[in-house]
Image 1: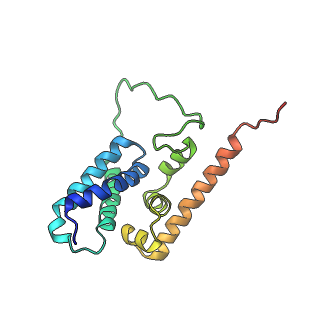
Image 2: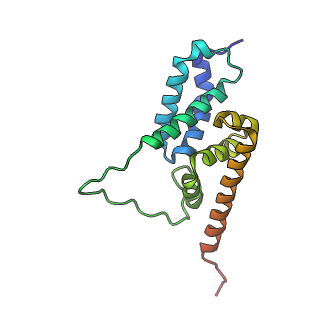
Length: 169
């Protein structure tokens, strides 16, 4: 039995939103990205309903929309900037529920590395599917994943090194 778009959206929305949260770094932009992805998939549903893996198609759409939105985003200078948010101490979770250092490290990764890491570790996708979503070969997807993982490892080491040590003195 073939799923209709409503059933597909009911199954995939939470998963797409989780991926979007990791890519965007905040829930507001993640919901916007998720909704835009579902809108695009819905508009093409009739032509693509025969597609073998509509979930992968939706993730590809989401990743491409995220990349394109980052290209269009420009900083706007204002005369009176709002008060800055209180800096995170590293003890409380970031906006994704991740430790602050990990949230910062994920946001600092280049787009393709962030997508590769998120798909591999958040969604447990095989590297062949990651490569399809990124629109590259398996070797290139492995390179993006390895570089992203290395950057996260360095960030973890830096976070560990900056933690205060309790020596009971």
